[in-house]
Image 1 (cartoon, rainbow, N blue to C red):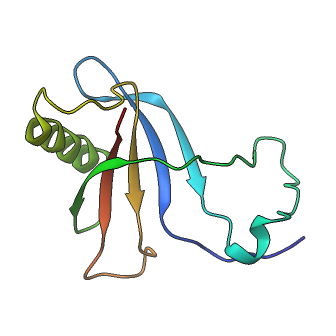
Image 2 (tube, rainbow, N blue to C red; image 1 turned 120 degrees about the vertical axis):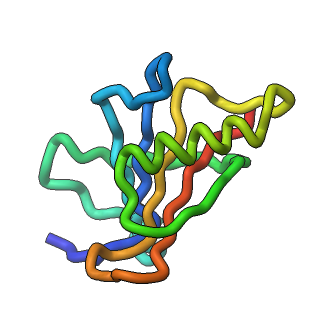
Length: 117
C-alpha cells in the first residue's frame, strides 16, 4: 500500500546468447528509494522479490535516444570490442539501464554495464 514513485535507473539484466542476441529471460530491477531501504514494504505480488545488489565495479558505455533491445545489443558489442581480451568481466549477463521517463523526448541517457570479475 505504500507508493514509492519511479526511480532511476531501471535496470534490466540481459542474458546474451552465443550470437550476442538476448535470451527471452530478463530480470527487471528498480531501486528502492533511500527512505524505504532500511525497511522496504512487502510486495503484494508474489512475482516481485526484494533483493540486495552487492557493490560492484563495472565497465560502462552510455548512449542516447529511446533504447530498444537492438540498441543494447549493439552497444554491448561495442563495449566488448573496446575492452578487448584483456579485461575480465562476467560474460553470462550484463545490465541494460535507462534513466529517463518515457515522456522525455530529448537528452535521454541509457547505459550498458559489464560487471568486472
